[in-house]
Image 1 (cartoon, rainbow, N blue to C red):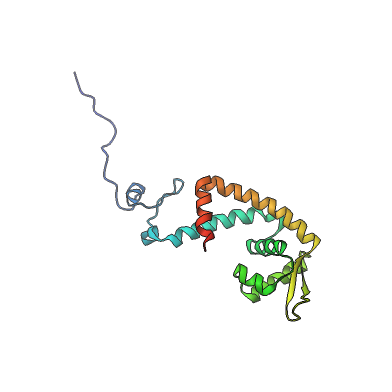
Image 2 (tube, helix red, strand yellow):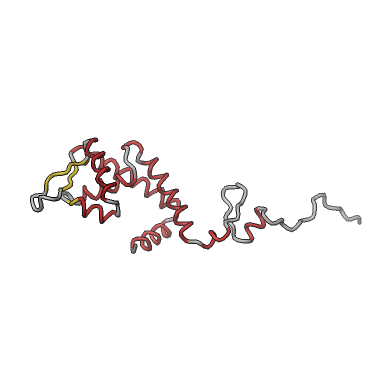
Length: 172
């Protein structure tokens, strides 16, 4: 009986920098693209949070394109909608938006007819923030679109991971 010789070349050890070698080191390989060794970033939580945040924001921006709201503007409109009469300083502190940046954003949202700043009856130095009727309609549509976004996140991360991530990050 004769032995058949394989026509396949013998397996060679993976060279440093190849996808197989990088996978063994724990490097990230994405969708068949050449692997890149992330070096110390492989051990940095902040790097992976930032990568996830970029994906989340890109999806959110695409999802809310029809209402023309950025993630920050959506947050402002959502919090004002939930807290009519909130002061600018309370909104700034709650969302962590610099006061000058928030003032510009409120001016833009006001020019679009979505929000209004009214003098506070309690403090002449501050303003109460309210949504206009158009702002309420925009928020209602944005809520629906943001729910669709959350469904995409649940699918991307998986239901249990999605809940766990929210639980962990809510503490911050």
